Image (tube, rainbow, N blue to C red; front, side, top):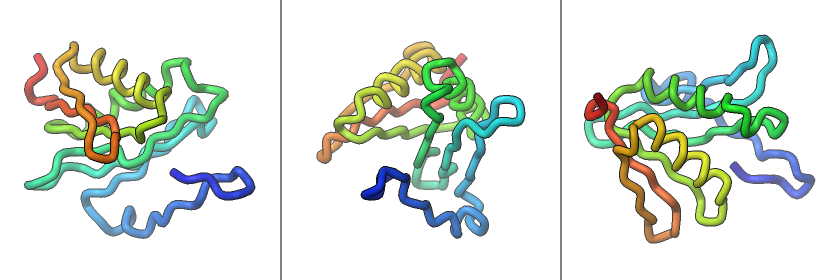
Length: 128
């Protein structure tokens, strides 16, 4: 997700989300209020499930709504998962590390790629 010069978020091209069976947009709501969104790519024969974008508005950040939404998404798409965060987004890294650790009972791996992205990987099929 990129910010534009005036501080607003650059719009996403969601066209493929309405036609591809592997792309899934989700709104995250608290009662009737929209508090975030998630863009997910479900697994194919060669690629694992992936969180492509995930956002909770600041007012609700740190209150557990993101964690609950992530748990629901992980449950909706069983199997292997791949979650990445950019190098300097330390709050996102901490959120995903904690959320995935609690969801998997610590059964995940973490590494950095050549671009210094933090990557967590796990398989819901291996969880008891």
